[in-house]
Amino acid sequence: MPGSVLQDPAIRQKAEALLARMSLEQKIGQMTLTERLSVTPADVRDFHLGGVLSGSGSCPGSNRPEDWVAMNDAYWTASMTEDEKRLAIPLLYGVDAIHGHNNVRGATIFPHNIGLGAAYDHDLLKRVASVTAREILATGVDWTFAPNLSVARDIHWGRTYESYSEDTGIVTSYAGEFIQALQADLGTDGVVACIKHWVGDGGTTNGIDQGDVALSIDELETVHMRPYRQAIDAGALTIMASFSSWNGDKCHGHKFLLTDILKTQWGFGGFVISDWDGIDYLSEDYHDAVALAVNAGIDMFMVSENWKDFIAHLKRHVQRGSVSKKRIDDAVSRILKVKLAYGLFDKPRPLERAWSNHASFGSSEHRSVAREAVRKSLVLLKNEKSLLPLAKNARVLVAGKNANNLGHQCGGFSIVWQGTCGNEMVEGGTSVWEGIRQVAANASLSQEDYGADADPAQHDAAIVVIGEHPYAEGLGDVREGNHLIVEAGSQIKGSINVLRPYGKTLELASLHPEDLRTIRTITEKGILAVVVMISGRPLVVDRELEASSAFVAAWLPGSEGHGIADVLFGDFDFHGKLSFSWPGNGVNAPAGHRKSHAPLFPRGYGMTYLN
Ligand code: GLC
Image (tube, rainbow, N blue to C red; front, side, top):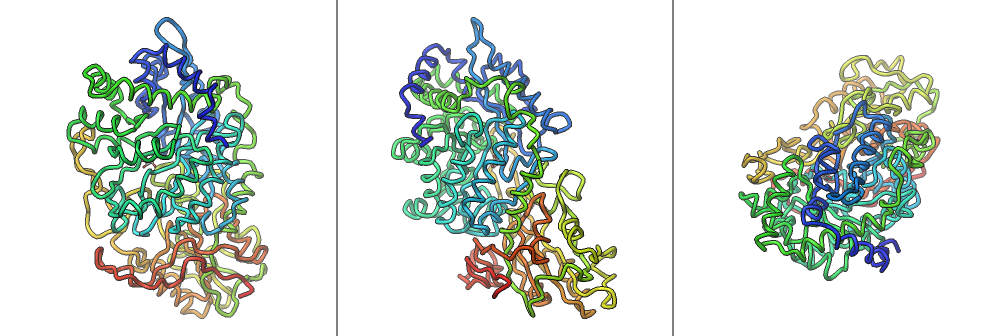
């Protein structure tokens, strides 16, 4: 099992031999991970940095694979400088490739995890992981902060769509498979995975992002830890700590979670990283925060800008003894073992690697895997009078704000952090409308707001594509008021970082009244409507459901929108089953007063043409 590779005596000996040659500066440099906009290749060389990352949407040059390869080649080459003051220790470059290599123009963008959860197809999941790994490698990158193993328990959470399911069993069953396919042979065809966010990020009270998880250790273990155990047993090499807290204590400073469980009890041999400036929230005093986090068990520190401060503070702690040399050596040994196990020391420079700039990047072959994933992710919730499948010669009016909007169908973490709007940025993809137009010659795209140009004399049926706009993290939360999302932190200059929520309710008719208005404008003319909802989560859609003859949950399908037409026009039957229970109105009660409500559709629900 790849996980055991970290126990390999040869790997351990090489790491120990290298560690013995390293200065304190070199060791602390390896524990430092910073953002590309804050660091040059010369900095990587002179400060011996262990990692550089792209924050979501932080892309070099024209954001083409060749620009990424050139950037990585410069960083990697700098890290391999060997002289009297420097040791050649190759840099790891990390990205959020969470549904394909989603930052890069022309990449194959897969359905977000909530859709893959509905597909419930392990063979497909492995092919998604393999294609993702190859498109990451095509850009000279070796490390992705994925898969997200959250078990999202409250769909008010803005990161629900990054979770495969509300059910621990489904997430667990996916965890190991994805890791093995993503890391593959740990060298040529695979990339280093980073499972996240440890632990319980999907279990916060009222689904508040970076909030607090009020659970017993047994509940935390049963619901949220199990997928990580599976992933670690499958060989996951790195883990990212969660911004959230457990019973009031921040995960980033939680020794019991980061060291006692992961490293001592479970024997995890890889390394733990902090999230984006995640240690800042441990204390108003950054010097204290550094020691708290290192001593709790963080091994590599994602410091977006002030990485030189971090290095200086940690050095001072070691010199004063408030952080032991033993802890430093443990952290660096883990980092070296992962780099050795992954074969990073033996790889040629990025410009000379087999996968760099590979022609398969964004290829039709890769996109066909994503198209299959879209088909299998769709969940049919209603099909009155067997309106679906539609005949390919039907005169179909296609309407709705998400009908021809690749940015909206990809959702957050797509080209830019919060996602995009329109079709320009998601190159090579097909919108829902473009997919329909390819199979239904008599389909037409509504040219008027709310489908006002619907005409029963010209249209046999309508397809109305509705739902959410893109969002990411706390900006996707649905909550009352502006809760404090992150307390004052030291390096965030003490400002209280309160994110504007997506809305105050899960009721679509309140969040986006334009959708119900469009459906009704069309159906009031006697035209039957097939409603397709693009969203990062289930929503309360009682009124939209009532107004439609057929209703499809399409989640965030990514770049291959034609997968939706494949099913609506009968080339494929529906396959997807809900991996989240679907709420009725009860879920909308104010936070704290949400009575347990029977779902409108239970997890596992999903119709086919036959029923
Ligand atoms: C973000 C996210 C994390 C991501 C990291 C790097 O804040 O919490 O999932 O991997 O920053 O972009």
